[in-house]
Length: 273
Image 1 (tube, one colour):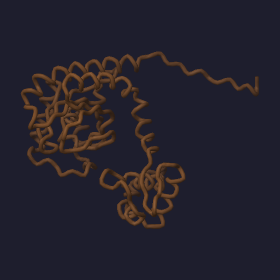
Image 2 (tube, one colour):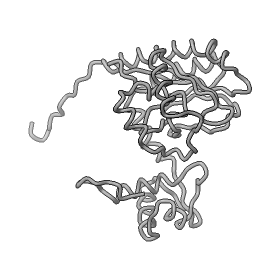
Image 3 (cartoon, one colour):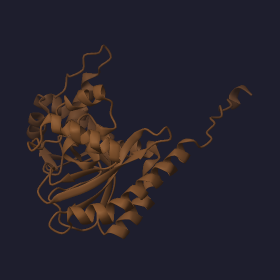
Image 4 (tube, one colour):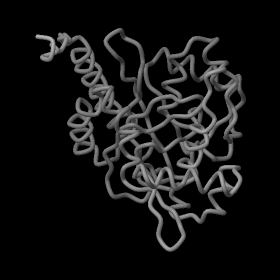
């Protein structure tokens, strides 16, 4: 997993440390040294040094010879989300949308050919796939991903689709590359996307774009329903108008937040005063 960088400034040890953190997930909450070494493709001594370093930094804890992540790892992702200013803006709107629809709502951004969830307000319903902040899914199989892909230029879209997914899910085989491009053209024109059981059986969702102050699509917001409970007609006729209004409100407030006055004042050195 490590050693992928080709630039002269690439730090392989840092890449290996990040690989170790990425080994842990919902199915691997606790891992032995041997399991971490195998998952990260590292020699046991290397994996041990990295784990002990991460433990000293507070990102990993060890119990009875097994390792697990600590909540401090959340600071890595939340630093990114917080730097956008997006979560504080989106949260009340997501909560209102969920209260009105009775369904879960999330926001995601594009990372390679995947989407990554950066905000979520959920309801206790049984859905085939678990979603948390940081969850990664193939963009072409999700409504949010299709909204984000549709906003790309043809060259950028080709580059993104050429990248392999890191979500660990099997590819969707119900659509050709040409059909996907035709669908993205339609999504770009109408301003929303539908994913009907493309990600997993029973998972149906509709998504709309969230734009920054320049009008660029930077994120996507969705409403997710269980296919057995909510028809496509109900999703599009009842929930989509609320979603489009909410995404527009978030976009408008985000644009205002980005345009706020900001001045950095140079600190005076009292020792030279």
